[in-house]
Length: 345
Image (tube, rainbow, N blue to C red):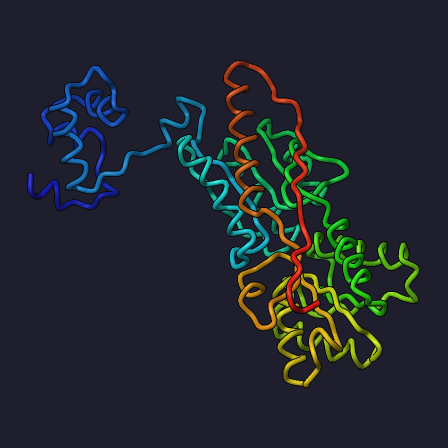
């Protein structure tokens, strides 16, 4: 028995566990499933052996037998962004108690990478897929349309949803902040965002900025695009230099995220630019840095964790309906956002 227990865990089979426990492989299988037909003593003995030798059941055969993989795939643009981390946490709150595992993919703000990840994930038969954003390549949309599983698009309100949606209008959020800056007496308002359209939600915030400038009859748009998404703190500081050189009269800046806004704030402090007296600064996301810096950043807050939780709840409802041969009708949940007034405006 000692030699068997010292063997590599990867080489262990259910039959070997059965031999060590002195029972049949079927009994081991039933014990691992908590089958009521197995006595508590027998199950305890089997689980003790499993624990001691580090046996991990092979889920492949079970997946083919049940036609269920037991996991949900979720794609996020960045694993370093606390907003998306909170969204993942919200999903786990709902999926965990339901016995579903979450498999994450990082698209790095690339639609082509998202397409590759979708292709790879669908080969592993996920129960559902949760996506960030509503813009995808034609090939990705085609694969998802044929997948026959629940799809939830988050953090956006796409014009042509694939299935379910849990999000908000990033354009409306950008416009709302411009209106807030205008109400606070700012008339020369600029925008700092990424130099590419890889961050489609950031591009929508910029569109919201441009729409609000037109609505309010302001003299011109002042837009600086700098850096590959996600725009970093240091890139925000460099973008401020470009903004002030081109439009020295600017009296407020809306940034695509709190990280770039923090970079602008730090650069203002280095230059001796008074915030908010000379220049107002606003961000997006309500990151921890926005709440802890000095002065604290005015920003737009979204219930990131709530987005994830609601998306997971829709998936669970869709899977429950599927058991009865039903299809849950596509649902769109519009999540709220709010301007959080702090000390930089």
